Length: 280
Image (cartoon, rainbow, N blue to C red; front, top):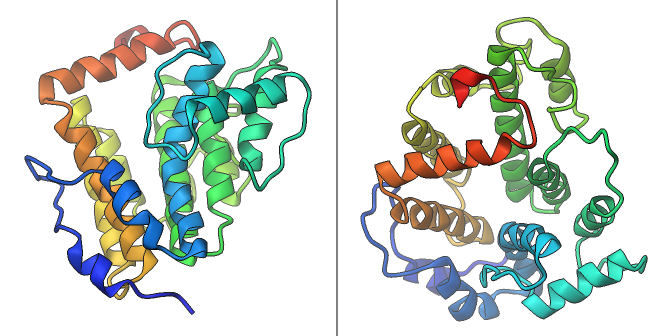
């Protein structure tokens, strides 16, 4: 039976995506409340913090002395030792590091010349696939939801610019196959994806920061609806962390800086994939 955290949840501040300041952070939760969770629930919350480990691994593969995000589950020393062990052909115990990270680092060092998927996308795909198999139904659904959203957005952009979509969609689900092969406006998946129309409308927003904000609003609504009856459970805590991280990210940007950031991301992709001139 799932454990209830009455005092902890009651102590958490109310959040909205429009918050203009925060007195509490994702890092604060890790140091203050995480130790009071059950061991099983800590493992579920670890899935959230793995997103920072993913980013750290990507940095360290390029520069072992890189400054990493301290919000991850692993220290700089742990990650560098892990990467070195994989590079030297060693095996990592799944209890120490998730298998998908070992698989990713191993493939990074055995890159094939015809690789077409960006490392960031490949790692995200492995992460979502790993997390979507967790024992908690809501948390598994959250990662599956994000995987579907990301793939649909990629499919819509690929269709718009007539890119070859076969190697861009990540995953082997029926929805992935439909995105790769269908010529229908809705890819033949509207019956399975009830938010498809909304996502298509969002994808058509030309202003980058506004589009990202709308995507986060859609994700926020999905979480609120999916945990409506989870009052004091680990699901509510997981949602709190995701929403808190969203606000932290938006508070670090204003509209102008946000546009610059997204343009820089696109510029950074130019050396790895061919992007149509009108999108640059």
